[in-house]
Image: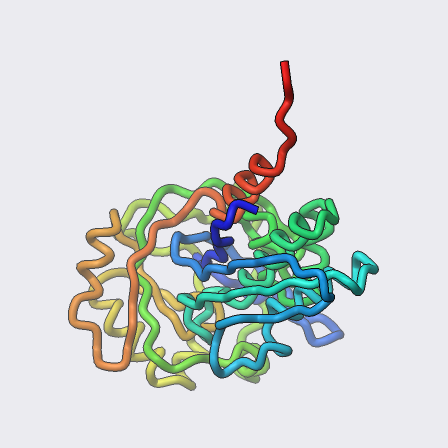
Length: 298
């Protein structure tokens, strides 16, 4: 192994429409995922004693409940090899309960990295299918491409997005995803849209495409999210990502995005990020493959 960390990038939902609710309680969605260059980092080492151990990670999440350990367990069960083990170091930068997909991205990176390090040779479609059992956002991180997602997240269509920078604000109060989706006032009948009718981000300063159906629900229930939307909205067109609590606005470049974050209110955090064309996880996997490829003689 090269020793380089494995990135687990965050995402933004450039729109999020709730189009229905299934009999099993899951919601049908239509959303546009933008991968950004703000990421957690995982360091993963194979071990021979069959133990799965997390080092670091969020203090408030027990290791056995963390998605990285659950992902490793799921992959090991799929392989049918209970002797496989790993030590997984996790450095968190993506806030918990922020709607940035941090836990799902960590799980996806764990699946991709351990599939390689354990020599399982499962394809990305299989890994994405496994990941869906862990969370609706996991498949998009496994595949590593910006995409429109439909269904509960399993139907992905890759899209090319224009280069944009984003100012992202976390107002210090995490939002429980399940509570947001279970809210009785949530609208669940947004009409479906299809490519080429799909609204993609246009010029900077223009209205963001679509909407986030969860935003009015969460803003009404969480004063901190409502305040963040108002504060960032005074600097650009602000929108909540996912089920919150993070909100973001689009800017021409990282410098402009960073400037918009000056004088953040006490207790809030923020960062400037750039939208990526593909996940850095794909590049990291390519490095791993190249490092372990046999050297061919002439």
